[in-house]
Image (cartoon, rainbow, N blue to C red; front, side):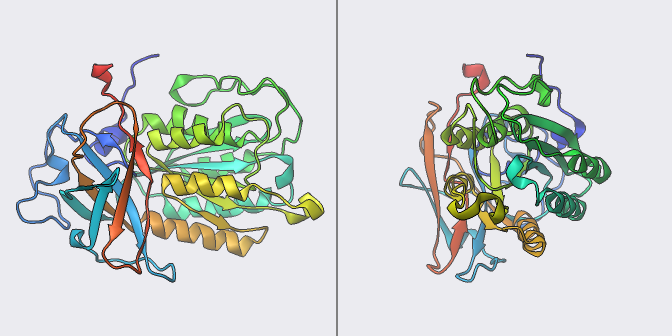
Length: 351
């Protein structure tokens, strides 16, 4: 595989922390002026950490019992635990304007026939409202095949055109498309049997082939009924790929109830698992356009109203194992929305 070349945006993002939990290194060239924000006295700003200092970083939201976002908290309002052991919070900051990389994942299987146009319209409006100059997004549709409709861009017009190009494909195909997706080239065949909605494969490929090569804050927004049929990858593997890519997953559960008849559908359970483990959440939309607009607005507010905690883990071993991390608010009525943990992967030069 060719050596990854960083774009100017990616290089700039190396000066900021990653979305969710990750073992990472910071920028080599510290800024001449200390960053603004909530920094305790004597605390070294996160951006000036030396290379090869291992730091676990977590972006998270805090909500009250009614689901309203809580602003203006400080590091003294939280305790952090890794695998049940308390950790010392070294860095804390309220972040709302760091570069953002978004993946819009749109279900174009047969079950979405009567809601696809609604998804296109509201999804494009969301991108127009949330994207800022340093942000980027891509669009993938998934059904029998997985198609990269638009790679990373800041152009809302290109993203809108990509969304509008999504078409329903309900064919019971075998295998998968061989179109390009990200720097690793063609999508590998995902299944040797019948396929209907390759949802888990789409999450895996978007995480592994697209988002894992990016830096900065990363999120996927899935517009789907949550039903998977024919994926090679299991939901557990899709979740692991998203966690390793440091990508939060939001699921807008869009279901045309009339399509399923009396039996209903059952995709919400696995989607709740995916979103919970990655620090996102499931929002029930049904087939109502106003609910979809409200869901996108909620996601926009959450992505722009995050806190960041950083700590050097007491367990410094990089053995590839999963480490469970908990942020506990000292106010019992507060609820934390955060990733469940991270993988302590070896450094590339140690492999």
